[in-house]
Image 1 (cartoon, rainbow, N blue to C red):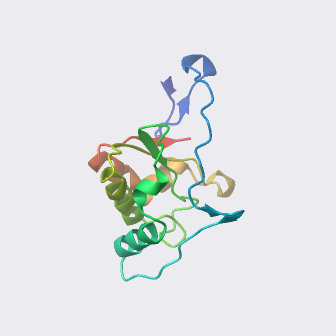
Image 2: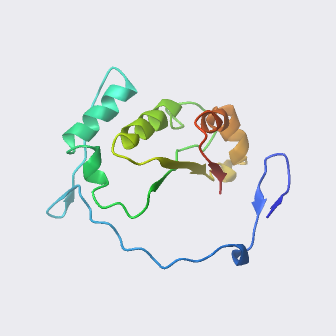
Length: 145
C-alpha cells in the first residue's frame, strides 16, 4: 500500500486483500407487511431525537438482534465542506456510537468517499468538518474510499 499525496489517498490492488465469503442478508426488523417502518421526530437536541427514534422503533438492540459483525461502518453524508444540514453533524455520529456501545458493539469505522463530482477531495472535506480530529479523539479508523 502506498500513500501518494498530502490527502493520503491509498493505492492498492485486490491482491492485498483476503476475500471472504458473502454474508447472508440480515432480517429486516423494521417492516410491517411489505411496508418499511420509520420514525420521524422533532426534538430539542440530536441526542434526544435519536433516542426517541430508537424508542419508537423498539430500541437499539432490535436493529442488531443478529449481528453479522462486531464492527459498524458509519458512512456520513459529506458531499461538500458545507456544515449541517448539508453534511452529517458530528454529534449525530457520536450519539449513535454511544447508543451502540450500550448494547455491546465496540468497533466503529467512519468512512466516506464523496465530493468528487463537485471537485472536492474527501479528506479535505473531512478535515474542514472536523471528522479527522473526531475520529482521532475516539481512536476510531477513518477511511477515505
